[in-house]
Amino acid sequence: MTTSTFTPDADWLDFHPHPSRPTFVLPAGAVDAHCHVFGPGNEFPFAPERKYTPCDAGKDQLFELRDHLGVSRNVIVQATCHGADNSAMVDALVSSKDRARGVATVRPDVTDAQLHELHEAGVRGVRFNYVARLVDPQPDEYYHRIVEKISPLGWHIVIYFEASDLARRWDFFTSLRTIVVVDHMGRPDVSQPVDGEEFELFTRLVREHDNFWVKVTCPERLSLSGPPAYDDVVPFARRVVEEFPDRVLWGTDWPHPNLKDHMPDDATLVDYVPRIATTPDLQRRLLVDNPTRLYWEGERW
Ligand code: 0GY
Image (cartoon, rainbow, N blue to C red):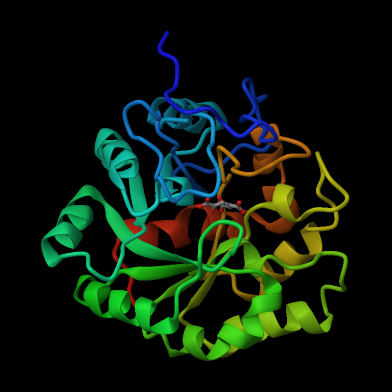
């Protein structure tokens, strides 16, 4: 057995080693539309500018989890611990034999040839991350330059921000002329009412801009009431699924970076699905139709 070149942060929990079998049977073609790969660090070193050092969680473990949970395909999102070096993610895409697509992190100096290579490997979007504990946010002009570079490819943009940042980033977000996918429902404070001011601003963003899609992911990250039911997050996710059934995505967020209090058994995240998408029709759209349109059929706005 090889030992990692990197020492994971001491206060950081590793992913669940033996998730149970979910009770909910995922429909054929279900996509885990938000997950990551970390390293392994001795093959794909973590970025010098990273703000955390994770445990190794490579493609083989991801594909094992996929098969164990009954997922058909993955969307692998570049994690900040790898910076703009997408090689671990790209290696996973290529090894998946068309069963994975990717979302990359690129810098404004990325070349057209590099973008083309990423596209060939299965990348269909870039991620703009505004969460300060993960990255140093850049001025709008930085992102505009990336938008220009990716526009010929028809890629979408995934944005990750805290709910408290939405108002001040509203103008930039709504200026984007492509599909925009919001991570983790814009990270609502779930101690506030679902029809309160904060979440209303978020649902207004999606209601008034039909290029906005939402990942109803990460109850384990947002919940204050905790596992295994994540009861306090359910009304938020359910509201989004019911109001925007054709623009929602689900995912596990495996291997769950930066969790310090509890690590979910990934089966609980599958069993969470029928509580937020309460009919077979909503479940099929959330798990199969929407991610397939966006990542495998090339839907554009
Ligand atoms: C997530 C959430 C987190 C981390 C990252 O790229 C990342 O490092 O996204 C987080 O710490 O909230 O979506 O994986």
